[in-house]
Amino acid sequence: MAKRKLQRFAENETFNHFFQPGWEELSAGFSLHGKWNSDFFRNYNPVIIEVGCGKGEYTVELAKKYTTKNFIGIDKKGARMWRGAKTSDEEKHSNVAFVRVRAENICKVFGEAEVDEIWITFPEPQPNSPRHSKRFTSPEFIERFKKILKPGGIIHLKTDNDMFYDYTLDVINENGHILLYNNNNLYLHPDEPEVKDVVDVQTHYEKIWLEQGLTIKYLRFKLKED
Image (cartoon, rainbow, N blue to C red):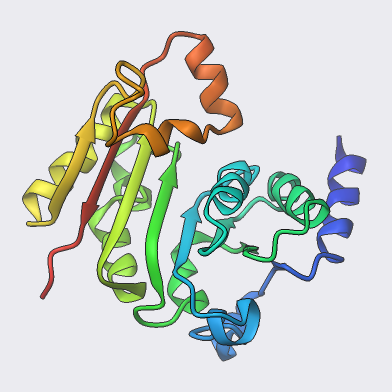
């Protein structure tokens, strides 16, 4: 296992769409901060990011489906991200990138109003109260997202965790954000227009949880404007 991880770390270094900025680089100014469209994708298509992308399959599948949008997967686990980076490299997708970085540093990776949409797919629920701020839909993370999202930008959440789903609804309601859609059983009516695009793309673990009979929840919302 350790050898495989080392091999994947080494291969990640060879991908020109895989970035691993260290703390010093982030502090000094990440080279693509505010410049993803102009300097990397070399177009001005919408930028969509997946926070906690894991193996990156959701990022890659969305990129394949929406070729006129740019997709960037964010995670701290390079060995997991290798799969998405490898697949997108082999399939030659020009609208995909990956950044290995802790999500807390997301504002050092993206500039103000640089991102059009954020996907949060099956995040760690962080069930212990002292770790509330680590949840990707916590008020602390929402403040980070507010800095990088364009006005009217959308946040999507898919989760199998009831607690996380309910917690996010509470955060939306208590802070005056705008709930656009929510569904506590996404696959009950998968042909509904509101969810068809969402169910068409599944993560590795989502498929496993569906086989186990778990219920998948989905919601999307916009942030309250100041």
